[in-house]
Image 1 (cartoon, rainbow, N blue to C red):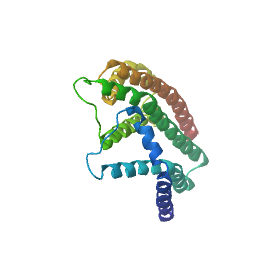
Image 2: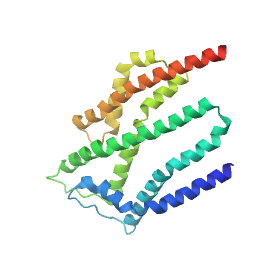
Image 3: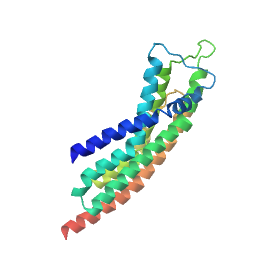
Image 4: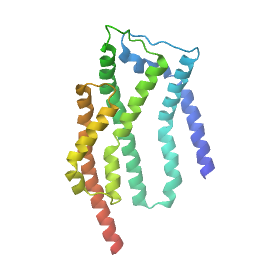
Length: 231
């Protein structure tokens, strides 16, 4: 069972990688769009090839992800109850949704503002020229980081479901959460200015509040489960 599903996952990745090769140029155009008139350079003979296939592999993984999750769920769900399968499926959908939301926020807000700011920083003294490898790594790192950070509501719901924290504790910890969010925004924001930092902080604060709401539902579900077990 495990080997057959693993083989299917490998085949799906290979097929998705082949399909993604047809869209890699468009993906690179999208990632390089924010550079406007600045054309990236290659510092090594194989740099463009490495970047091209790296982007293709990322695209292939994204394309194959639904099928991979389907195979993973298919392996674990036979041993689960109907309710557990529903919770797992909902969680997987939620993870994908919030991760995609984070990538969209990075692509439409964080990266355009960051690149504009960085291109103008010390522009009278330094000519802003980027290597294709360095720039693509910069952009994909921001997108991945934003995607992971946007999983905050689900993380809060999970720890509430496990009974490690309550919604009351989360509500009382807002001031500490604000400090933590400010530090996180400062680390994630690729520019040192306060404006871009605030743009990152606002959605993080909204995500924390959303996390409290989801934690409330998770906490209620936990109480019901404990009552059912007691009966």
